Length: 232
Length: 405
Image (cartoon, rainbow over all chains, first blue to last red; front, side):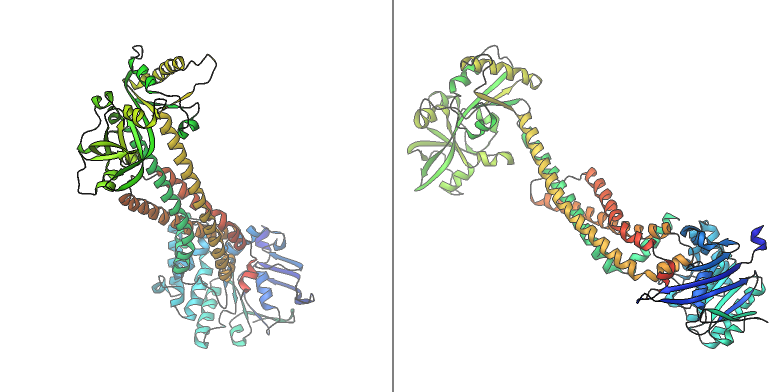
């Protein structure tokens, strides 16, 4: 019951600092409090060094806060074991990165299939889901292509297909259009918009205004703090 | 994780860098093929020697002078006489004794056609032919008459004949001087077994009686008395009976040590087999050291691979790979390298042993246990030397791995 009533993402005074080479602290996040509910389409914006990537890594259970609490579906991420965190990343979060999204020299099919292998899903079910996912992103004719034999836009679509196969609660995209031309970038964002309309929660990290405009809610970070949080 | 899928992934990863994978395997290939080759040769040698020694039959034993095997080999003892041999032969209670073959050995100057050489001379009876089973290339072996009248006749080993008279001359009827005394050549013999080549082809055979009367003198001791028995199952009892006869003749009291040594071919066979097996094991173990070197090579390359694929590891962790998944994936790659290397090594080892068997008189033997051990050792090397790099990969923090440049 807690799962239904709790927000998907609940940041409570989350802080993150890094210790630099000269042993000084670099504060990436300075006490962020934030809630994201199921079905939202959020863009996290900010200039370089504002802490948006750090925020995304913590949201994706790839990194841990050094202060405050992060509750994912009501569970305190900081109290979970490495394997439990891996399970959350596998089942609840679909990642789309800016670069190095796919396993090199591995087919599109195998890339999309991989998260399901970690979840112990049967081969026949995996095959069915891969076919559905690549069809959804319009790449059913490229399933047997190697990841280094497809374009940048297609790579991002494969990453989205991979993010979708486990039917996660959230899709977390870190600068997903950073390496793409405007037309391809708009195509990817429109696709994410379509997914959101079907009820999928999407969080996009970007420093580009026109990309952020695709989202319904825009959070702006500066120096590790939320300066604006607007909904359209 | 699906192990078949993991295996296929490992093959895919390794195929991405074929040359590196092949070079990594080389150490394992060399180690395994060397072990397989040596074990195969060793077992072939045991089989060969067993077959050769068995040609003498298990119905044979020998009596050597001296109270220990070492003294018997050294041949320094002088307490076994032609009379001892006769006593055994004529003893009616020794019903299982079939043939008694006494002989002496001595290295003596032999001259013919202006050539002088020191050659091993057997002083033997006509029964020596039963033990040595020589192939007569020309003439005849020693006869009973030659022994009884101490004829000054000689049978040449084929190499001796070639040394003194050349390849094409048949020396039968010619004379040769042994210890400066003329002997008539009555035959040329060749060993019918490779094992006896050294003891037959390079030697001379003259009657025991002639050796004693002409060369060694009356107090000469025999080098050995060979005894063939009728029923090999009763050989141990016959050995005991012969010992009683000899102890009586040599006035050895109760509790005193024998002044002779008895060896049966079964003993010799066991000793030789043990020695060869130990030598094989030792050399195989030394070759096995190269497997450790190969394993270190595997570890080195796996560490490089883990570093190169750090971002890939980060990505896999981001999509849900647990520590165990990453560990198994990299361990599988190391084991695939070593097992493939091991399989190639096994094939090369077997091929090498087969080639060697074509050129030397050792039979081609494939040892299934050594192959099983080789496969096991290959997998073990993969696991042991792949574990550290795989553990290192599995324990990476996902965010550090993703950020790795």
